[in-house]
Image (cartoon, rainbow, N blue to C red; front, side):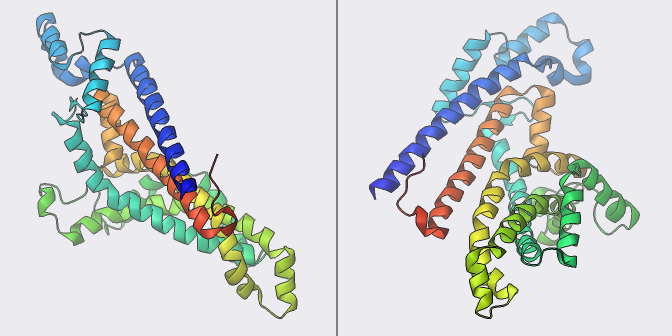
Length: 328
């Protein structure tokens, strides 16, 4: 019990330090950005707005204050539970995050789950039968798609299935003109399938390659040779001995890929005009929306940190050698 309490306390302390560093660095980078938030807020109307009106807008959003004062006010609001107000969406940042996360959760969650399962299965099969046709096809698939840009593959899917064949919608998370609450599950699934497919196909490669490498090592081990001498087939050895041991690197890559998955979703959502966290990140960056950018950065940090913490806990469940050991 003491080991688990020490582990949780260590993780929470690390999380607090990481969040503090992300907040400081994120705010500094946003302030050093060449984007003028007032011009971005006005858009095409900035040529018709005089200096007095610009000063009023800056005062309204607190942009006329020194950078350290702005950061202090934002930090004080954050500690009180207020994430600030978004200039881009003219709404509280908390509401924007909640709405966008609700849309992104099915996309990110399903892509993460299916990419992990498919990649693990392909890696186990390829590693259990190295040099065979399934190994060669798996490696070719992984090597090609591991280097393929997400936006390029997403555009390719859009051109083939939406423009060419007309099987899927071109954009959005629902039919154009239909309110989000009126979108049926079938309509939502139709709009979800292409961005989901783009993230799954590209996310399989890293997990499959790492799992394959571990499986090849396991199949050449002494206990695998002993099991083969007792009459066990390669598939039996792979399922009984290999899959459990190969699960450790697969879990590492799977949870470590959460940040990469979010980065891929930013590009995929832009291509498909999918209104999730990725498109909100791009919009906040273009508009110089500092409160929304910082909230997204902190959310992503918490998201990835939680994933790594879950992976560390699963290690202790899968590998008995780590029971009772506190991570350093």
